[in-house]
Image 1 (cartoon, rainbow, N blue to C red):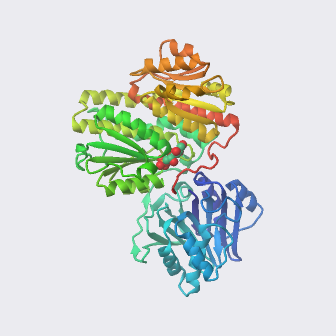
Image 2: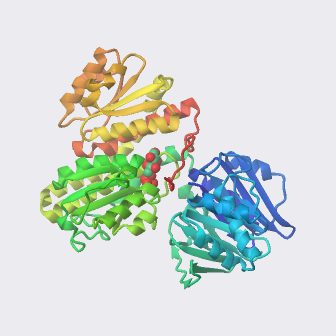
Length: 609
Ligand code: F6R
């Protein structure tokens, strides 16, 4: 939550920082602000609302300094307002912050006693005062920042400027991400790569408990005791356009359409076509003793949790190993029964979700081996897990997750087949059949995406309803949950996902002409069962929208609207069936005029509890 950017160099800082903020707006959009140091002094501009409101505010101003800070906010302490917008200033110290300071109340009271006056309700302003307090006590800028951060508890990624030390910026990382960008005669830092990509491909992810002092031609890294650390930038081969809309109306639409590509990238170099086997390179199950895993436990949040729920069906079916699935925020506050024989798998697109990170740490304390399925390279989950399986889906900018979900599913299929081969449960012939299905998915997805018009027609017919029920059975049940989540988060329409077999135990009471029921009815083990669920809804005048692989006429004849899915092995259907549901949610939201890429109250990575 919240995005921060810092620039120091020879160019005008303002456009670079505003551009960086636009690229980080997915992290929060309650308010934004910039601080630029010019020869004439410091200029701070802040505005409640989106980056476009800030751009409007500075449009006619000449602010030509070559160093500055920027911030886009997702409110935690203090409501969204101009006063609570960052940057915050205390005397000559200016701070932008992503995270939450847990001992904020004590430190604020302490500083008030020492004569500090606060203008906002934010924990960030307190940090600026704390640093100023140390500077007033005679410490130099760097020393004052180190003294201050040693007193902070919680999560913080900071950008800091001192008006009287105009040759440097400082950034600090503790439990909130910061990536450093190394340019020519200019250096940058930001909460995430997209803000840096247009300027340099040389980057480095800071580690927790570290601080960087940044000048136009150098970056000095140290831990919180002031001990120097090596700077080791790597080259990241990601183009800035990958993080731009590329002709699509919204990032969500672009990312939906990127899925054939994204899942291909998840499979790339991991499928051995000559032997029809899987190689996971970095994930060496045998060497790490994971071939003898007795249980698998998925932990994740939101859409990634739904991938974990589908993962239970996939892994149990392919490997025969029992699987549990937990929402990370539940897992972390009970006594989960994970131990030495358990492989705990954290699924996280961002790798920065606070609850998922806490879950993986708890599992490690209980001796479980851990594996992260992550999209963002070098993210906290990726770094802290014993092993990591990257999805390589490319940057996901839209707040509503789409390609991350399908690529997480692919990673789970690959992992399950890999484990099955090691344990002997999956024969070479069976592996070969699974692989054939996997490699057929991108072109089947292409065929689905070509039918966007059909989805638009369904969306037009149903966009005005205020409640939806999504029903699926077996492996389509997590897909129903995901379809409902997509609709509610971007269109603000109430939608619930249920296992179809459960409707008789309550939800059928809601069924009637005012509530469309979306069925995911794929051919397979429970097809007859779900067909009879459709009949039950029909008998109660429910409006039925079916997504089906059925070749017969029953499901279409019972449905008010139908979308046909290609028929494949039932176990692999979620990768296909979720996509028209993503498109349906997207087009209903567009028709209703909501802000698709930045739905209200949400942010892309939930780095706070
Ligand atoms: C929904 C959505 C969220 C995320 C959840 C976990 O569209 O994007 O539910 O899936 O916040 O995020 P990650 O996967 O980054 O841990």
